[in-house]
Length: 120
Ligand code: HEC
Image (cartoon, rainbow, N blue to C red; front, side):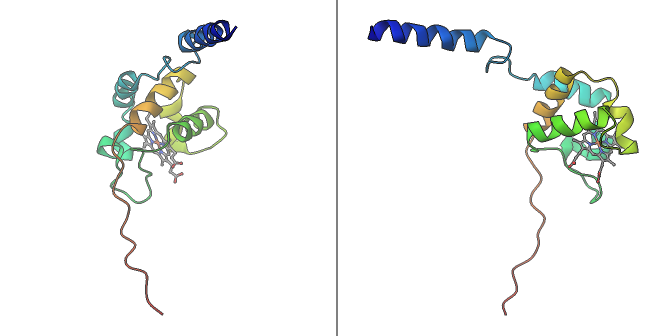
């Protein structure tokens, strides 16, 4: 009986890995890099996704789910930033996930130096 349960668990695990939702459906960061290049994301968000301009958010090291969600909001016009309308236009969900995986995998910018806490 015990063996049968283990077997069932193994089949389930294998099925999960092979399913499109399983861990093997890893986002393709290399494809994301190509798309980011094509759409000049770094022209605004900085080389390697680290922004040099305070008003422009850095994307390097950002959570993939956050980038994915924001890109979908831009694409659907639910978050309206004129500069982001064109870069997000026509991307499939998969393209967006690939782009998000690419930026999430880049080393993030050092945290801004906010100075030492002052003593009272
Ligand atoms: C023409 C300049 C420009 C280009 C090109 C551009 N962006 Fe943006 N992006 C912006 C601006 C401006 C904002 C909004 C900043 C704000 O709301 O404060 C933004 C915001 C974002 C955000 C939300 C960040 C956050 O912290 O909320 C993401 C994610 C993003 N861009 C991804 C991309 C990706 C991916 C590309 C390439 C496909 C791209 N951007 C291309 C200007 C640009």
